[in-house]
Image (tube, rainbow, N blue to C red; front, side):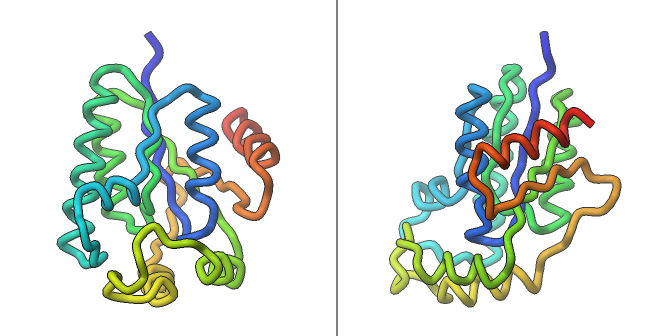
Length: 174
């Protein structure tokens, strides 16, 4: 039996993580877990504060573990912009005997800012503690780029999926 793979995403909000990873999961026939949807299912009025993040990421880890232990690959579409969160998932992959892959979707800051401003938000803005742009600024300030030991594939968040998929396939083949 082939080892399952734990895929995690990283990149600024509105960089194109969901756009790429949802299509990728469909192409590969693997489970897609969207952290934003999970957060909304768990918490009526999300605050995006540390305790809430911790709860959501622990739940993502739990769900991923169940899939991996059953031999099923999974795409965890969340923002693993912090090293400690990536390390938690890498450890899970080791513990379950799964392969581990980070998909970093990059897009220019001005473009993600523009996308956020024009986006229909799943969470009504009036229920957010901070504005979407403030959340973006906070995330950019806290962003920890992967180091050379982390298995990262970089995807251009400005390209259509067919070109992104070619980027992925080339990177995975090398």
